[in-house]
Image 1: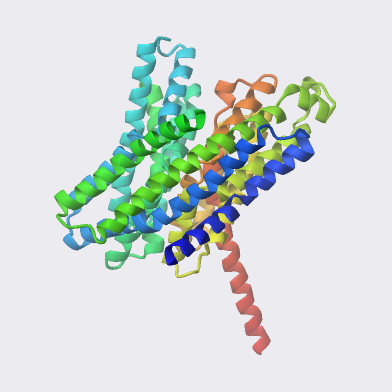
Image 2 (image 1 turned 45 degrees about the vertical axis):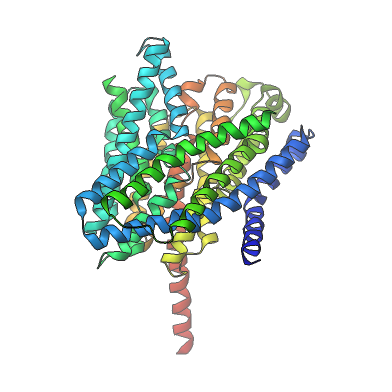
Length: 243
Length: 264
């Protein structure tokens, strides 16, 4: 009974989360485009799935992703095993990014642009090689980002120096990178952090900051995602310059 | 039959997304830390919920939201619609004639950000950690306003054809200045909120808008100008979240001062 009530609560809050989209779509369809929605039944069924899916995801968040992220942070802090913690951080960043479907799509697009620009041959094999190289580059950059970010939490260094340093890196790279790669590079920062990675990495950072003495979870615990969205910009532009 | 196939394919891609994460996390827990996972059964059920939830969510989006969103982005950037709405030939249009597109960009940016599951997760965590000083809805609305502003400006950039990196560098400078004056506890969270806004819901719709716009406006190339909206959507929330914290600090300081002078 209790389980069911909690699930109904999540369904209700999911409906509230999706209400703005429904309003926006209805307004533009009715007022601006002035055409009836095609396939209304299919859209209704899809909307129901989105609501249910969000409700399930939020339950899974509280029950699976948050607790495991915290428990692994506490365990590492208790064992005080820094080298393994850093290996874990790198593996988490690299492993979650290399399989990311959004990144695969962007890499394929980037390969096409490079081929159109005459940077690589417009052939299946060289396109695939370019896309795979780009994916590995981005995954490496996210692995390094989480590693450095975790080390920052352990040491308690202020985050703004890293971010401002990263910004300077982006600006310098922009001056030298080929123009075709710049848009893709800037966008790639946004696609690396998936819906599964974000809660896990956030719980890890906050859990570490909570269990290390002298760290404040608000000041030190957040920031891993920021690192993971900044380094790919620099690495992708470097990739565009080297190839 | 189509939808079953969709389910199968999306489920499979969600599993390839979750499996490496689960393998790394449980592998380290068992082999390196050599500790049993506390409440293992409940955590595993949680992972299954995440799998089911994400699959349903993604299939639902592909069935309902993405087709409408893409169709709308296409219709709004369609030359015929633009001629009817503006009453002018493409060559004679000014940037302000595209107001429906800016309104759509802002509305779709705001509403998809409110529905973004990764942002909900970070907001829940921030409310827990800050002991309620940061509210889930306060943060989500601040981020959504940032995304709305960013995508609108990004659409304006595509219409006017100005280079992307000028905007990004100007944005960086604003962020650096805000960092100097914002309350310390918001800074890391603000930086993070730039990265979480653009995952599942926002990216496909915004990308469709950018590519549609770049292929309709004379003189723009979808390859060179169609990208960059996501970069805007990840930069502007940093400003809006720091701005939200600065405003609420300013308000509470002003309220305290008022109270203080009232006592005298």
